[in-house]
Amino acid sequence: MNARLTVEQRPSPNHGERTPGPIDILLLHYTGMPGRAEAALRWLCSPKSQVSCHYFVFEDGRVVQLVPEDRRAWHAGASLWAGEADINSRSIGIEIANHGHPGGLPEYPDAQIEALIALCREIVGHHPIPPHRILAHSDVAPGRKLDPGEHFPWRRLALADIGHWVEPADVEDGRSLRRGDAGPATEAFQAMLALYGYGLALDGRFGPRTEDVVAAFQRHFRPARVDGVADRSTIRTLHRLLIPLP
Image (tube, rainbow, N blue to C red; front, side, top):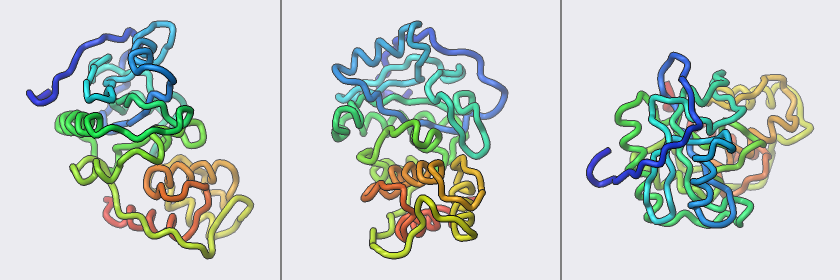
């Protein structure tokens, strides 16, 4: 780490060997626990929890490392991205102290986000993590996870060259795809989501899984309205994101 970012060491026993392959995902979480952030950190360091992460960022910007980057921390759980199910082996996980949805989804303090940006810069500086693989926990586990939530400042990170972002299309009423719809238009939209990386079968049916994926996409890339409905704004924003990808 560079001199501007001081990192405390608080080892967690909850880690293991990575399977062979690159570390090419950076996964961001919120703690989502009531009370003080220190309690969440203690839980991540407890052998009883069977969970961990590589880094923990306090509200005041303090950064703690729990697991070495070359080890497989236990933070993603059941998840999927771009056909890969063992996200823990492919990723670095950062827990950001925030009460999350259970606590009303408070805003992320400036000091916390500045420290997070500095940490992310260090990580992507020595791992082959492309911008479009800096992801939310909710991206890889739609429906099961909501973090780091629709208040997380993805745009601010992107302005600091962290992550993939486009200005979302304006929300407007009109034609949309939603639960219960079926047919070629639904399948084509599912294909766009899958091309970006979301784990989704191309069955042409807009069921609960597709709705969860749409809500996860909105939470990250079009947070003005998170409802699981593929309106024109959602589809246009997704299209804008896909254009520059390799």
